[in-house]
Length: 309
Image (cartoon, rainbow, N blue to C red):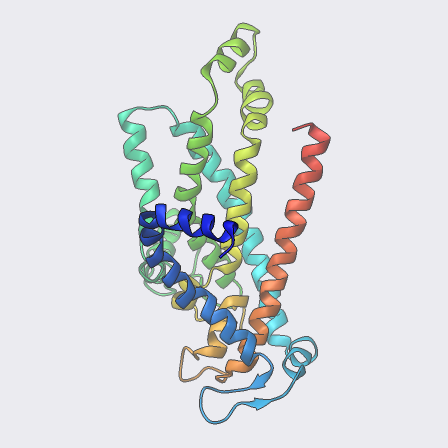
């Protein structure tokens, strides 16, 4: 064995405790991440429905994605609508809550805990709660709006016209607490000396917010936006429970459609079980998310150069 090889083995032996502690995570990663990816890469070139013999079809699955599957591209449009609506509402609300509750007081701590609670709840439980709240005939939302005199008749919140709005509201309710915590961490990292200097210079609240707080929070905001973007594109659990992608596919997002190709979620589903085609669609969806993420990072790097960060 060469000297370089001996040094490597000596290093592994000396750090064997660390490697043994990492071994369970490595095994789990290999079994539940690496193996499924390799499995999908294999079957995306086959017509395979989970039983019988897999029939090699070459690139036909990808041709079908781009030319013969309008349902998938409708789900892509739905995904962008969902992600856009969620981010436009969630991040400003989370920032405002963080700005108001960032001071370390008892009432702020209690408020933070209450707002953060939906984040640790199961997606299925949240969806069931929203189903009861937004039920057309006996939901509390319709009752409350009628009591206020805002509406004269019940609104079908889970119908074609309002279903996407309902799932976006659910996403905001479930995610705003998480991003609030991130914003609070960023706000507490800003030195109080900066605010004291601004106060001595005569800066008012609005000037302090827009010229000091937000610029200094930019690195944290960039990280939060990146995280929110990726997570939002992969959302599907709560939508699956609340609407199953309906009605008429109005809330069917990319990863829910992929899930349906592998595991049709209801007996009346129009999507049939197709493992091979589902693997091909998964790769296309991953490329779309990768493209959006890469574009975001590119724009972010350009803005950093312009601002001199």
